[in-house]
Image 1: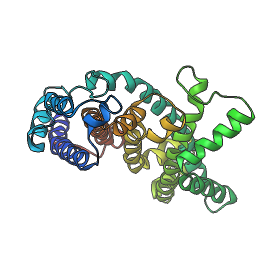
Image 2: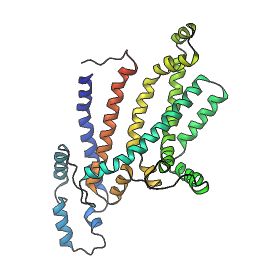
Image 3: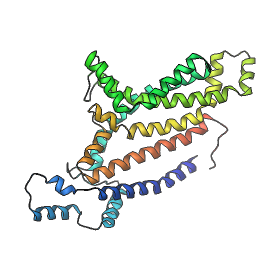
Image 4: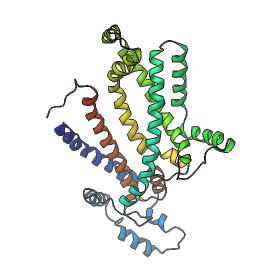
Length: 308
C-alpha cells in the first residue's frame, strides 16, 4: 500500500511540471504587460518601467524565468505577488479555508442528495419516481452555475429575505453558494449511483441475501450499495478536487473570498506568480485527493489489493 502511494506521488511530478509549463507559457502569450498594468495611471517613465521589469526578472528570457520559478517552487517558494507584494503561499493559505468551507458544505449537499436520489431511482426503477428523479438531475446538469446562483439570490435573498447574498461569515452566508455548488455534484452523483445500483441489483448474491430473511433496507444499503461504490467513489474524488479548485464562478457570483476569487483577480491583474502558484496548488489538491481515492478502493472492496 505504501509503495503504491509513493509510486503515485512520483508519477504526479511530471503532471505538476507539465501544468506549470502550460500555465507559464499561456500567461506569457497573453496580450499586455504586468508592469504596465501595475503602473497604469502613475505616469511612470520608460526608465522606471524598465527598472521594475529588471527588478522582477521579467526582462530575462522566458525559459530562464521558468527555470528560476521551478527551482524556487521545489523548495516550497511560489514567489511574491506582483500586485500585493506578499508571498504567494501566504495569500493562498489565507484564502484556502474559505474555499474549503464552501467545498465541504457543497460536498455534504451533493453526497446527501446524490445518493438519496440515485438509490431511490434504482430501487424504484421504471416508475414515476425514477423518471422524476432523472429529470431533476438532467435539469441540474444542464443549468449553468451562474444562472442558478442568480435565481437563488433573487428568490431566497431578494424576494424572501431568508439569506444574505454576499460576503463571508456565518452559516447563513454559506447556504446559497454551497447549494449552487452542491447541486451540480448531486446531479452527477445521482445518475452514477443509479447506474451502478441497477447493475448490482441484478446480481445473484442479492437474491441469496433476501432468501436469508434479511430486511430489504439491509440488502440495499449493506450489500448492494457497498458493491456499487467503486465507480461512484472515483467520480466523488474528482468532484472533491473540482469543488476545491472549481468554485470560481460561485465565489465570484456571491462575492466570497476564496481560491477562485484570488485566481480571477490575479488573472485580471496579470499577476503571474500568483496565477502560477494558485493553479499549481489546485492541481496538487487534485493529485492528493485522487491518491486517497485510489487507496480507498481496497477499503471498500477487500478483493482489491495493491502489491507492496
